[in-house]
Length: 300
Image (cartoon, rainbow, N blue to C red):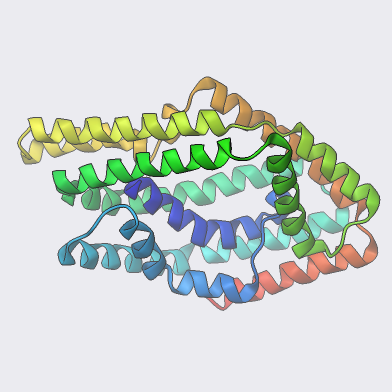
């Protein structure tokens, strides 16, 4: 959906490729330094491209979006990237001293703080952009959301549990080996055990996406009823805020429980993995983090 996709594409381009790379000891998600710079420096185009998948924008809306993204990136370069470098340096120290469960939890908290800072900064512009969408655009948007839900369901139904487990294992292994190099047999065994312990949240995620779309539709219905009066704009934004800023309020208890379960499994797994790294693997990780520091420093 446009607004959450606006959030998610920003998060994906900045955080998944920079911030989650920064938190590799937690999530071990990686991209090359080159692709990180490319994604970051072209974020305005990336976000616009994602949004165009969901709704057709007017020229005025496109200019507004470009201006907002440019402003957000300028702020992010000046105030946030330096904090990421500091956190990576802490991770490098922790790798030498040994990663503990409490250390991983600290990474989770830092990641949340970094993301919350972006959300807080972006919220006014996102709300203005959301309010600018016409009823026709909203209808187009909601239809595309459901179309993508149906595609996801079809893809899921056409794969077996064994196939999905194999695909997830390969994805996680690729993310890890991007930092460590090849894993040994014991490390692969531990990874297999982790993969088997992770719970699928597919059904809960689809239901969340539908509840999320319903919440968005309700906010725009409120806007229609209020005839776009300026005082009523505040009510519109309050109604839309859970879908944009506080999405956990729309997730079911079951969905949140699965998330907590999977996070706990990662917190348990990562210190074991780090402690099992050979001298060469650890050197590879440190080199990758050094590259990431240089990469981020080249952005500000």
